[in-house]
Image (cartoon, rainbow over all chains, first blue to last red; front, side):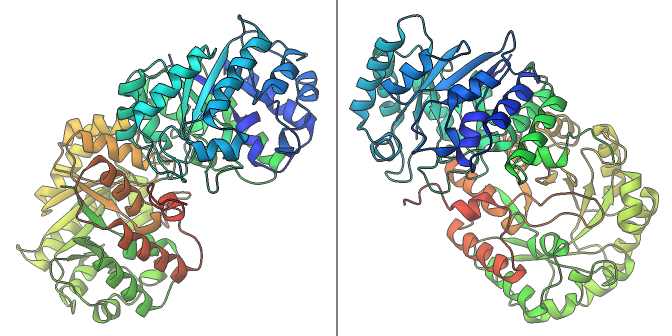
Length: 292
Length: 292
């Protein structure tokens, strides 16, 4: 069983021009109907820094929570954690990002890595012990600013984040520098319990996911349509598309609990909401068994 | 050592609007300078059927053959074989296509599969015994018209093509229906000596290549920039991009003999010749170690 955390309403839409709050809720509801069990729905960031993520409480008020679906929110800082605690919808977990790249961390959250670790501890103090916090380590496979980043450094940062209050860890290939070999190298250090968040910058997201699956990794972040990309890293490229991973898993006989047909409907909805085609090739070509 | 047969000047350009003959020769020369040791340069098809492949002899006259590079041509029939025999440049081998899908074969070459096998025998008779003929089995992983195609059927067709005069075989995923599981299933039947020609229709070309490499497959068709797609199969999608495979192999430590930098120059040349960006993501993002 593969656990997919859908990040399209957050990581996907943050790279797009802002769309109506009601449309963001509509997308979440469409995704809730696909069999996905985890969806990152909002980000409690400054609307000035990321305009397309404005009004998270309004999105949460308008969406219809579905039993059995865990809704996540990104909190970048203590203020975000306080806002998340006032969510009108119960949140199953919070994501908190720290980067293995000092330069990227500075650009993304205007903090040193040490400040990010201290911020996570402060976030934990605000939300209390029972709340699940997944710490996402960005640029875990390298950064466009510093080049390669050693697995041991990522592993050490992971330990520091767990010590600071993270419940679980996810490593992110923010700018598409992962390859199957580097997936193996890093997971040898950190172990298969760590989740994986992939980007399609160099067309390697799917082969990286496949390699990770072979190593026993079972938690993946995906974005509907393959939308996404960091606003703070040029040419970051979209996320691994949810429909691409489900298409692969369906054929491999790996259970995801997700309906590809329902995903393709959600994908076509998001394309109409953002007003341009999504990058996913499965979205445009359809399932392999669709006869002409 | 991986053997890449570059098919961009043929399979890549055939899906594009015709470009000048001199530009086709220029692309071939750029590719000859990358370390590639096999390039499919022309197709002896009717210019009415495939206008962008018109004037193969002119292309061959204008290109500069490089020692150590094997130049290939596609011949669809006896007439094509006769023309190939008059090539002003020594051809190292001919490709001949027959489809595992009866409907696709009919659309592509207006023959039944049996007629294609008989045509290969006639081509062999024309070119004589020493000429290398690689028989490419299209739709080897399924067709949009008939759906899945059984590996045993592909294996049997392969044997018939070898009996009819083929020197080697390549299986082609013409419409992007291959997946890692189906790569395994088919190669269990046909063995790793058979080459592999992949398309990116559903974003699976690289993961399929990776799986095939793990099974010992060492011959791959690739197209510069990921250009390509059959004019006779809607939405066939581009070929596996040469730069994407070389980028992966470089990082895995699998030798290809090809310089990624030189490939990226050729890729940028072809983009300027066809007047639009190429699909390859490595072409747009650059190598992973390129620092900002």
